[in-house]
Image (cartoon, rainbow, N blue to C red; front, top):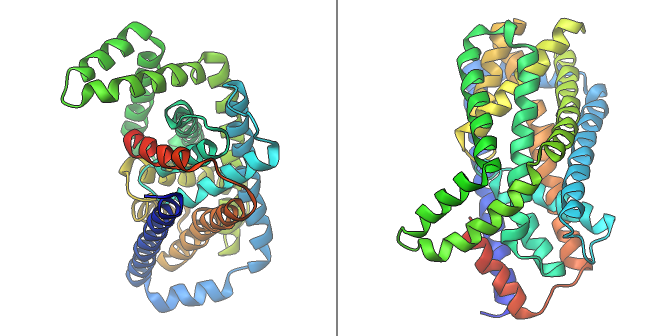
Length: 343
């Protein structure tokens, strides 16, 4: 397999992933629209206050910008930024958004592949950045969800479980003896000897990123960044006719954070189905919207966040492919090999 074949294979895989997710996403939209009365949803979309769309997209873009700052902070903290200027860092981060429709968003390890192409950083060294991003995003969502937990008591058990799992995971990572013992156990399994060295590299890097000071800084960035998407959802609810108030902002924050978390823990591509259904259900239960208005609000926020990000990712990936070079052929092939083993 040459470089051209490797690149063709990667692009084919990306196209297949995006196309599959688009089909699933369209099916979800049709399903919830039929449930809510397709004609009523169409009417609500026509009467939506589209003058709010720029504000909604600004909230989304600020979220992406702050999350890029976190990615770049991690990159430079680990000293993996050789030959990577700020613009290239931004393009790599944005290109990773194209994989937001993968299970748990872990396909965003594409960023590690792109970084490997440009400065030779092993994927096993940079992939923990993606893990740390997902963890701090999850913590931020839990904190935002916690703000409105009194609004929906049935969500408390899941909230407590997720908080406990997060704390346990952080403790395990920060206890080097325990983590290395687990890796040694894995090494005894079939194919474990091949996997263990990479896991040790991933663990070492992850432990650096989960140092309490780094964890605190990155979590604060995550809370602020995702807070802007909660604000975007607040504007969406205004767009379907809800009266602006502090209560509506709190409800928007809780519902957006909760539905995003439900989608994340479902491990469905992009949380497709889980996020939409939970969002509609919570809007019906907490805000008192009609089924069609709740469906309309959910469709708009998903297109202005998830699918808008995928579109930006496609543009950034095309830009990188056209205007930046790659390493020699064996490096490109090693990248693909590393990616398959890490994932």
